[in-house]
Image (cartoon, rainbow, N blue to C red):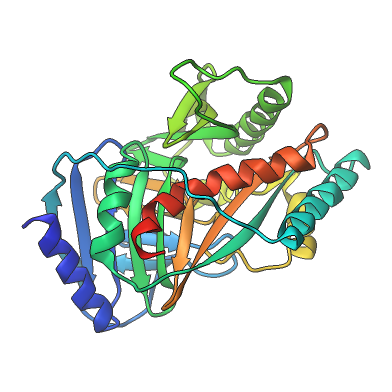
Length: 355
């Protein structure tokens, strides 16, 4: 099996409107596909089905699973290929910029009133596309972002989603687990490591502290690494790795996921006030953006879940790209707008052939 044949299989699956998922783990050259044999909706609140799960930002909606036992599982090795890229101008209307900067300013007002420490605000940008051609954009997705979890997901219940996310929500292996705190964003301009501002370091520390506090309830041992620069495509982030041991056998994947999601990196702190601000002010439904996606294997207790960032939803004649940023007391609305413009490049580079 090669990639061309895999893409033909998922195209046929999509034409039959049957669920499928194509995915590749970070630093892996193995492309895996699950082709569900029916059109059923399988949910997995307990994460007890082997397969790939996708959960929305709003955790009140049940995660959807494409189960291994209900699917054909095929794979291939990804050959080395250099993809040429050039920056794509994400043109915008003045009103778009004004509305987003107004949202950031409103978040700053809330933070300055001491109700909230951090709020993650976001926006959705629509681009017209010529067709849904998996053979045009999937190879670019796989080759451009080798350090990310790359996927294309389709289910009649959700539509087509695709992404290249740099952020681990949770990796479990027996009784041990790993997660990360990821915050701060800079465009990579040269081979030199970027210099991080106090604002960016503070934002990252807020995320690290909040995740560590959440995990204290479900872990017996917790180790926090030093913060370092992590590159994801054309962007750099501040990253801290957090590892630990589950407290007891009653601590399940569902328990620890509920403690982590949504993380401060996609919602804010304190969680309740940040979530309230997002629901009342963002003005659109995030759906599966800033939710999570990944593999569950309840037999050997190894699961890998990723925060659904740098993603898009694809419809018949348009692609919806999602971007956002963390707002803290010293954020600048103009700079926050530019950060989201830079983040659009990740998925724009993927869909470039069908724009």
